[in-house]
Length: 155
Image (cartoon, rainbow, N blue to C red):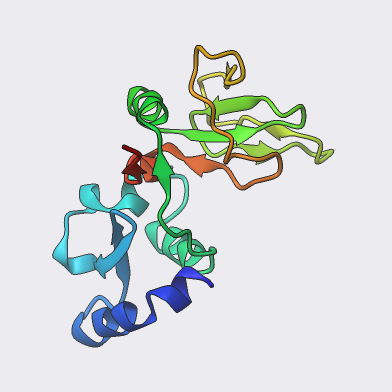
């Protein structure tokens, strides 16, 4: 099920009521774009190289993820990073990128975007020092730190 299908009724209400006729996203729930400040919207806080409207459209066609949770260790690592993306490279290593990583021309691995001034960071999550992010698989779309900070924390 896509986010558009899951939130169909909420989105219809927003569009029928709002003169903006567009949605914002706060804590993974759609709200009226006119009811919040841009800084509160997940589309605004994330990578700013893409317009909010494009991010909203991308979010609408993504698969709905139910009850996403992090362990407290995973949450604190995400909290310390605050922004960026987590992915697994072709070798299965967890990598952090400041901006949305892109596939290399030869389609073998993720590389940093030209606008990214910070080098990607290797996170060895298989030795016990860093938390293990088993749910992140090779080939998955990059996981947004900003989004993950809104997930539930396991008890």
